[in-house]
Picture 1 (cartoon, rainbow over the protein chains, first blue to last red):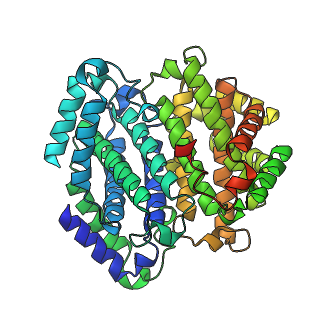
Picture 2: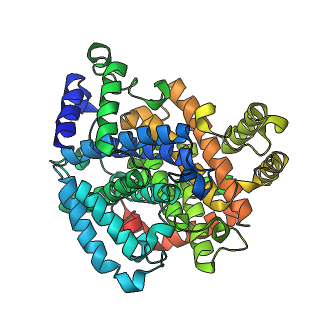
Length: 116
Length: 116
Length: 116
Length: 116
């Protein structure tokens, strides 16, 4: 991930794209890519989105969209000097307290932003 | 990242959340988190979103939302057996051809899904 | 809808919110609200999202989010002097040519941005 | 709006698209369209998104995306028997209490989902 971060930084520098790449704009761009991801899955049945059921075409598109999302995520984190891996580990720790194993079993309802 | 992937897999397994975690649902959940990220930046001036100008409160919220997005991204990739780092490197390679340095300088317009 | 448009315009004027309400920021705010809508449905089975199956709590939340999305949609259209009803009718006309009844029957795949 | 609602209902019926048009899927489709809207504005300066500064090409794209969002919004509301105009008016009433004129003047920070 550090290598990708540096590659992306150089990529933007070479093209003078730093003028566009403030976190606000990058967040919008990330939103645009997530829209493309939603677009892939919107009419699919659940089982058509799984590894067993997904079409080659949709799997290929999903790979591309996940890559786009990942690249923008790394760019935003880089611009704000955020360590994604550290923050992800922190969040897992927080979630393990928020969703105790027993009370969260089979229970999607608690796994919800509104209750966080 | 591999460690995070395994932790998340175990986290979902322990709570029987695999019934909810198909790629379609996870893509929606990712969309929900990106909405929270947009929410942070929506009324900010560009310079209030930069590292120099962002408030402590907004930086803290951004860290949490980027972590949430990262976790769902890793979950979707895991469910579909996608190697995020490999796909990200592929995409950078593709982009370097799509946006040649000279013709892309100072040029945001080409950096646009519609023209891809 | 015209009355709502004027109410929202006055609402923003009274609070000097026009400084924030450019179409770019409003589009982000709309994105934030759509994230909240996705959040409601993300773990639900299809039949739990239908009128017959949706919980009172989720229906209430959906009403609020649809209202929020509608209000921002009207605000953006107002800022850019766009007639939503006219554009919607134009789009239906375009779609009726793009998706001829016979060839589009039972066919979600064509109903996809990428093929447009 | 009622005419549009009925046209869309007929459009879906004629193509047997009701099998795809549950509120969950429609919410994802709405999310996809909002992604396209974000995509238009992501690299623009604020003044390039305003009526005075927006390019003809971007204004045309914005009209189409707002139409798409509006159509899906009407479809979801129809599927859940929600009166958008009534809910919008309710929400304005709620917001007028939540954001009193004096204390909300020039103050975007309060105009934030997290504080709602």
